[in-house]
Length: 272
Length: 325
Image (cartoon, rainbow over all chains, first blue to last red):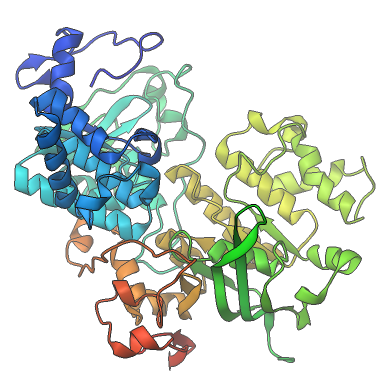
């Protein structure tokens, strides 16, 4: 999305290809056209992402006017339609309300409505449900999932919730200290993880379906300081499989199965 | 209630917070945070208290510790009513009951060293003399798997998980028998959560502690609790043994709550039945009539709108407040 402020953030290399076009090469103006129109984002905290002093109608109309060139009246009608789409009851009246008059779950629905207002092809949801209760979390994710199938939108969910990933996601990338350590389909990542960090995550979370006598395995130590990363594999100081080589050489992603890659010298020794 | 093994008995606990308006600050309504709640905690057990935000679980914990003066009802600690205690007697009673907070950043004084944070409660309760607690602090830090040399550091030099350990050491410093853990791991990273949960479980065994474990994460509660209480909008919905509750939830709210939590295993999770609740939790200022859950319940009937359900026994120590069971 090119939303990291510069300075201090600098993209020092690489490519971000969206439909054949490198987003890092285009001008800010072209990028602004893509944001909202083609790629939209939902943020973690709806309370701080919505403008508190203007009504929902005005906020929703803004992007409609900007990206779809609608006049004020049609934009207003479209805003009501969007609120209905995301399941806000009494939309005609509530569209005139300010964000604080909505609950957290409803605010996140407004954020989803805003993100979908221009039919994006890609939706990036950054921890979309961490600030809401479990029953509302289920509602929101069902909503995103339904809209995904209805409009054919691709979705990236950024989350630390392993349960949510298991329920809603097709493919998973596992990241540690700024690098991808494993990637594969949800089934293989959960069924046969091939990176010790992935396995550690899986076995360290309490599970609803397993009894209380199960012992949680613990990943020792802390996530590293990104300014002073360990040499070699960044995970090696916390890894139970670490060998000499791990502290000297950095492992690259290697194929360990069909469409399944792991960045670990000892991926074959990772056993569930 | 004498002669049983209850450490805490909560009887008909009610906690209202007044809502005031106008220049005269006249009372216009009450936030019914906790509305006629009764349960007990046995010696040495961990009782889980779950529910969504605003259901009154934190308020219940704070009423037990007498941090809020309850509007009505009793809290018995080893048979003695805490609500009638004042001043010196209350302070003495508090030594036995400690609290671990949710936010390890806000709950530690940034201007005190770790050693003073852990040592101060011992001075307050007259267990040691001021400045003479170095030995005890070192021992407490070791107990929570921190190094004694860290006692000279300030809170900002610790990570989130380490701060939570400090909070635990502070709670343990006065040798309490009962600890209220209010969302102790919800502010921590996944990999750190497991460390703190394991620590809490080990300490319970070693020090024969009793916990009231308040959390919204049902998986964590299941892992650590012997019995679980489910609350909704200030009311108890269901109480049961932890394994029983998760295997055989009876209340429609408990069922929906459990089904909303995904299991981190796609093969298991995709076979589960899902119940999706509609709407949000209503305001506790003006809760629905009858059963507080009825507007969101799929099995609502006339009686649910009109009459408040009582807790009924449906199995071995399994209680449910629902007309429809």
